[in-house]
Length: 211
Image 1: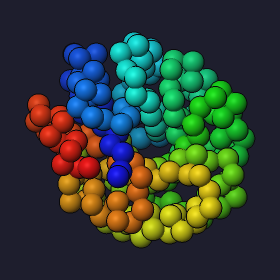
Image 2: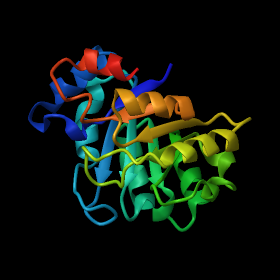
Image 3: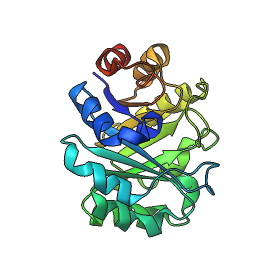
Image 4: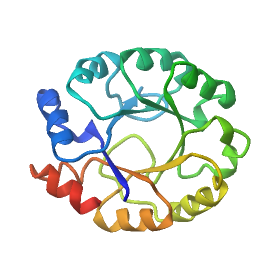
């Protein structure tokens, strides 16, 4: 059964503590924390202080996705703030191998994210350093975008590539009950969803529909 990681990008920031508690109580497996710097992607979200403020209220992992121009500088910030998983974009770093090492040296699960136009072969020589691969099925920056179906083939190729490795595949972008089924069939282990989880106040019902 796939894991569901609601993205708090779609939460009500005015009551963020209550929102994350409600997500955990509704059966979320992880909480997805989208960090955007207004440079690598055309949006600006939140930093480590926000993460630190919600950490005490969660018993499930916090999954930090760094959509930023200089993730290496920020890895220690989010590691110290309480992240459990830190995912960086392959497109944003020159030395992906050493950046993944840094995440693991901080005792965190190391993830790599690929934009829709980035081929899966960039992962080929770092598979021994990766714990999670995040496939973007929209162009990152904003919630509510339409699912890019060509990425299903990429998910399948990655699934074959990681055979024999202890690596999970996460998918983010345009996830709804229909696309969730397609992603799971292609090999996804974790589904990130914002709009579809927060579409109504019935978070448990919405999470169960995705699962």
